[in-house]
Structure formats: C-alpha cells, structure tokens
Amino acid sequence: MTAPSCAPATAASTELVVLLTEDGVPCGTAPKAQVHHSATPLHLAFSCWVLDDSGRTLLTRRAEVKRTWPGVWTNSFCGHPGPGEEPVAAVHRRAADELGTLVTAVAPVLPRFRYRAEMADGTVENEVCPVFTASLAADLAPDPAEVGDWRWVHLDDLRAEVEQDASPFSPWMLLQLAELPVAAR
Image 1 (cartoon, rainbow, N blue to C red):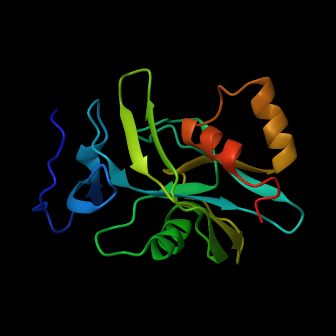
Image 2 (cartoon, one colour):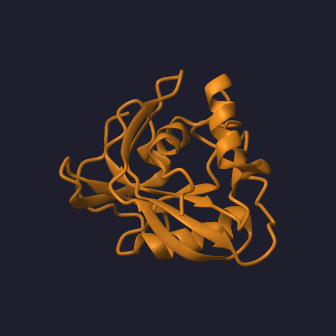
C-alpha cells in the first residue's frame, strides 16, 4: 500500500486523520483505516494520561481487535483530531468514545511530542502527538472494542514496572513516560 499524499480525501462519512508535512503543517487528510501500514505518513494524533488526586494514572490495555498494538498496555487513551478539530476537543470526544466517560482539567504536558514506532509485522505509527493530562468527571464504562482491560497505578510504580519489563507497554507510552514531569502535574 502506498502512503496517502497530502491531498484532500474524498469519503465524507469516513473517519479522517490530518496529514502533516515534516514541519508539522497540515497538508491534507486520509481515511484512518488506510493510514497505518508500512509507509504510514506523518499525521496528527494526541495522547492523554488520566490522573487522579492520589497521583495514580489510568492505564488501559488495548483491545485485541485494535489495528495497531493490540493487547498492549498504554496510557489512558489516544486518538486523532479530525480535520478542523482542536486537539482538546478531540480529547473530550475520545474519552467518551473509548472510556465511556467525561474528562475535565485537560492540560497539555508535552505539546511537541513526536514519535515513530514499528510493530513486528511492519506496521508503522508516525505521529505528531501532543500529550495531555486530564481528570475523570464520571465513572468509567470502556468500549470493549477499544479497551481490553484497565487499572490504576502510581506513576512511580509504573516507572518501576517499566524498568523491570517494558515489553507489555506501547512504544509511545514508554517514550512519553520518560518525558513526563515526575508528578505529571
């Protein structure tokens, strides 16, 4: 499969991701279902770490049906802003879609985060991915097509887990965890 060019997509009812130039400038859109492959173009995404008042973060295990990194543990949730959608609005939308809840106190913590990662099958993630923190505003009701499991963990304990064995975790979560401020707030 060839990489989508920086040109407008034609399918109006398809979930679209925003394609970016190497400088991070939007240059077009592509259907999400066609973006992730061995030549994934640079595109816009976001990650969110839900934190509670006792210094814990919500980890989720990606559902086994996910296209990229199925079954791995990761930060609370991720997604792609749609064309013209502000990243903070996308955070709120995806919290409802993935976690079945509302979030508050959405704040950027790593606004310039960018990464590229490759799965064993050659599928690539290639994202400019601002990282946010947030708090839960309601109980969780995760979508099983998105979240296979979830748990709360103190950030210090998570760092210790990662030091012992990083293999159960997503590559973007590992990179973000290394850059997050110690308390993340």
